[in-house]
Length: 253
Image (tube, rainbow, N blue to C red; front, side, top):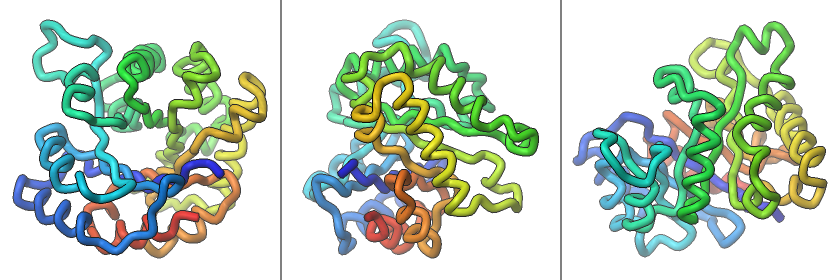
């Protein structure tokens, strides 16, 4: 069975005191996790070491960075390198989140470089893809997502691709008042897996975890995660509530 993942993305939220309180609650939570059912917590860079310390004894909980740079070191003030992340034992990094693409103009080519250097340093990329409202309304979302995958991931060897996680974000269903159904989530996840299969074969495609990142909540996680090709979620706002995120973790199949 593919690894089922509940990934929290705190985004740019929490003071130190709030972060510590949230991590303490997560560390104490009663959760159903295993080697094939894990939680990944992506915290702001100032809290990476704190999160490591708080969750160190929590089996099958892992800490992620929210971003990395394309170079291992150098005169890039304000950036965080994968060499730094590796040195403090961070095993996951988010790459290509829709907000990074929109606000920081990260292109598919830039994201390919980020994926490359993360894998070089044995850090698992959680690669984000997905379409905005105008693309969904034009019914061109399948081609759009395929292009994102092809331009950022398809240079990888099969064994490299199998060391990545993919997260699908229906940007049109986040904060727009529109809702993506579990059937729509499954449809796109199946499409993504078919794209991977066409390039790398069914065996590789069926081994890759694909997460859903469209407003996962405690009250819809079970239905979403029950879909055949949905292997968990990339959770934003709901991950800032320890009780709700615990419910989401426990909803993993």
